[in-house]
Image 1 (cartoon, helix red, strand yellow):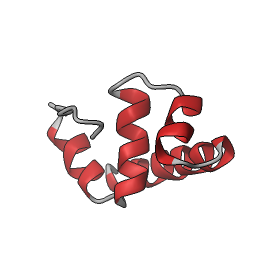
Image 2: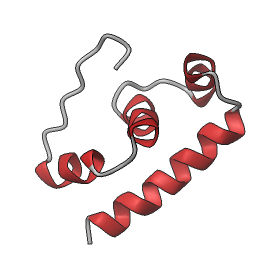
Image 3: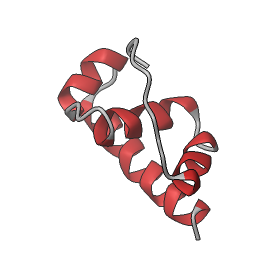
Image 4: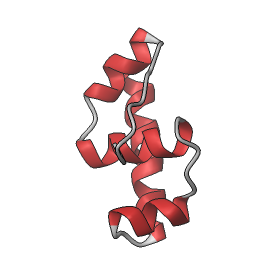
Length: 68
C-alpha cells in the first residue's frame, strides 16, 4: 500500500483485516498503522472525506464482529 509494507503482528487483527474489502482495509491501515489523516486518504484514494469516514466506521464495526 502506497509502496509501503505494513506489518500487523497480532494474528487475530491480521486475519480480520484480510476479510475486509480492499478499500476498507486500506483505509484502516492508512489511518491506524501509517498515521495518515482522513484528508490525506481522501486525496490519495480520490474520495470525499465523508466517504473515508463512512468506510472507517463501517470497517471498525466489521472488525469488532469478526474478532468476537
